[in-house]
Image (tube, rainbow, N blue to C red):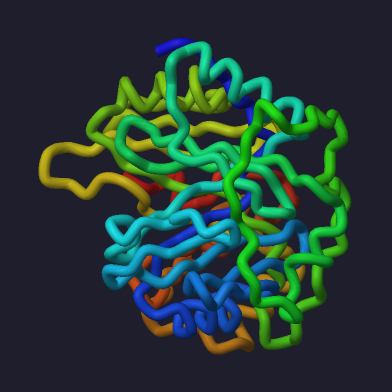
Length: 320
């Protein structure tokens, strides 16, 4: 495998296929402190954020045997994808479009074909499948004012095909390094941003090579017991992905993701706001967390660091 090394900054969002779009949107609004910022009714999609970026979470209703088309008429999502609830992709934020295009050129030189190339108006993206078939979106924001497109006043399609080689190679970084987070209501979890996703694999060595040589993640930690496991991050240095080896008969693929929460309001919220009876509480010396199951059974961990540091989420650290 030739070294491509996209080298993103951080995990920007998680995108899931869900069985009931409205039920899932309502769950993440009610329990996870996220607000819907954009709907694409024509493809059964909704997007949620707390203001740090255009979306922390994307949700797409399962296909039910129908192709879904983008704004230029192309088949954006084939009927054979998203037939069941599961991971659509993990979205990795690049520094700028020049870095994204350069990585795409290295990918072409290595003889690798992308899963897809898309213009989302607010960003441009190269989608790549890992050895297990999980899709990773490497994207660069194309505008600073994403709210002009991602808002609830619009419900039109945003995605069309994109040719990286004919695009401007801008070195401008359009993400906001100091975003103004939306103020949650007293009943809402004070969420900051998505951080941390967990993947399980039986192809540990192949996946390790992909994560380092193609994705270009930094290896932050690796353990061999009780199972081989590795923690990766982008250039920000925070732990954004855990890869765990599992045996025959154990589930592979996407396991869960985490949202970092403002520690000042976390304990108060758990004491005062309604939390599902199935929630699991984890308390540690330097952080605490609560793990919830969404309507499709996806696990989401809400965690707070007592010293406000970027620490590996607790449930990911204890995943096996």
